[in-house]
Image (spheres, rainbow, N blue to C red):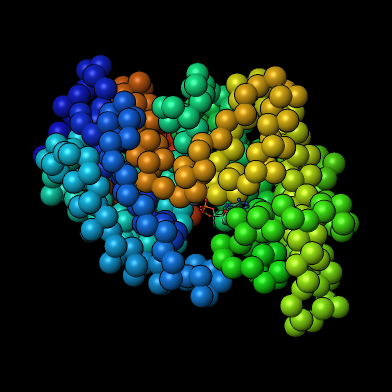
Length: 377
Ligand code: KG4
Ligand code: ZN
């Protein structure tokens, strides 16, 4: 028996700190948070083995998670000063993401929860990004629902109306490449390393953003869908005359700056449209790895100012994949379950899911049973 019902009757759950695991892509991470969301310990390893391949190799990532995770969890527990038996629950990213890594993290988390006789909370990785702005300390006054979220990572690019825990309305998203993918592919074409986003941003600082005329795909269109693949093709065309030659640095910097400016202009237009698609958001929030981009942050700050709301983005280390946001999302889910009179979630019957649309998240509160989260692949 777990202690999942121990807190029915108004108390908050979980009953003690939560240990969270992230392994959905190429970051292997563990964090322990108090039930109030204070970070007690955190360990994160960004796998380096993928750089030589110019992108994440799923099989290598899964094997690396398997090797790294036991030690990372042990270290995190040590750093927290707790013992395993002092934990109140275990959480892990169960989807969406690369299935090999998800299997490793989910099964590790479930195994630990079962051994400790504690509940296991399945976390949707995108939901974790979406709620990360509400982590204590990220915004001085906190972020209340509803808010407008721009989620921009290596695999995702979408605008969401975040109306509550489990309540996400997709306003629009990319119809081809994700924003991070566009940065990574452009960086590769310019001969930069991987991941390309930060390196392209650094090179762009030396360049002239008006030097090249890149297209602004979907700018001015209804809704807030994005498209980035045309930009990539435009860059390839600019590079054609140079063949295999190494580009002069000045030219590469001008291309990087112009490419980044095109992305920022498109995001500016699309996010302004997104504002017209929801009523009175309390804030504009950005999450995901690309939200680390300084130019994008400046552009989003201006949009938020124009709409009279604060712009909130987690600190850079919480924009990219991490376990703190996973623990926080699990706590939000537990709190919402308590608010709705549902029992403490215990999702050990749930299998890892490479795809897990946010629109399915509210169903976990629909019935007071373990099966309330959509099962299996
Ligand atoms: O959220 P994330 O860590 O991983 C997932 O994709 O879930 O995002 C990684 C992406 C990569 O494509 C990376 O190039 C991009 O975020 N990125 C950036 C910057 N830092 C990371 N893109 C543009 N500018 C940056 N400063
Ligand atoms: Zn992510």
